Each structure stands twice: as C-alpha cells, then as structure tokens.
View (cartoon, rainbow, N blue to C red):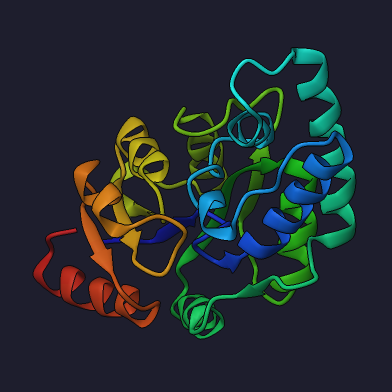
Length: 223
C-alpha cells in the first residue's frame, strides 16, 4: 500500500518558470549578455542554480563571470520569486485530499534549500509536509538519491510504500536511484516524452489523476 508521496517543487507543484526567467534575464543584462525566451528556460532548470546559469551563459564563459551571474541571479530571484508564481491548477485540491487520506507527503527540489523552504511555507503553509528539502551541502542534488532517502527516513516508510512525482527526466532518474516508482506530470516544464524516454512508471495529465492512480493501483495491488 502506498503511504507516502514525495513531490518535486518547480514544474510539479509550483509554476515558477516566469519568475526564474525574469530573474535570469535580469542577471544576464547586468553582465551585458542577451536574454533568452521563456521556453528556453524549461530546459535550463532542474539541475541546480549553478547549472542553470551555466546553461544560459555562452559556452566557455569564464568561471569568475559565472560566479558573478549566479550571485546576480540569486539577488534578482529573491526579489522576484513570488511575482508570478502560483500552484498549478488542481494542486491544492490534490494536497488537501492526500492529507485527508493520511498520505504522508514530502518535497524534494534541486532549488537551493533556503528558497525551497521559503516557497513551501508561502504557498503551502496549511499542508503538513513531513519533510522538505532543497539542495544542501550535506545532501547532493537529484538525481542522487540522498534527498529522497532523507525524506523517507523522516516518513519512516520503505521504498515500496512511497511514490516520487516530478516533471523531468531528473526526477525519474532520482526515483530509479532511490528504487521508487515514479509519476511523471504532463503539466510541468518538460515534454512528457522526456519522462517516457527515461522510463517513468506512470504519467498523469491532471493532479486529480494521481488520486485516481492511487485508487486503481491500490485496488489492484500493482503499485
């Protein structure tokens, strides 16, 4: 029986893309670089801030410049993170229903831990997540399984009792590394083909489908 679900944050629970793109383009402009269109950022995010900045800068950019742009991005994002961000349609209903069912929940993000905590507190203050973690020095970022194992320990659940829900191949690889079954969401940043190619276990087109998946899978004892 599934007793817990671990969620990715950006592109899964929250639509953060516009605020990330605005902050990134602001940081680029400060160093004289051209901006990128919104849709390009769908493929830049997901592997931590430094990798985001590395993707948006021209290849071969000096590391000193990269460090400066990372700092400028972080300052800009601190101002902008809640300008346009909002939970995806149906997410609050899903989380509330899971809470009522007694399903344990956690959040696992490659966003820096400080921002992860701030945003979960801001948008999901009434949801009792068992554990929330972003990238920390002591917890390597996804697809390493360390953050998932940290949350599982807090949930006191086995890998067979928990699902991992995300929107990218990084999330699917994380689930594989942690030996969890994965649920890929179609409303996120990446095309669903990316998740299918990464061998995602299930795909869903709407948050409600996660409840349907639990009901049908539990009834058939196949999750």
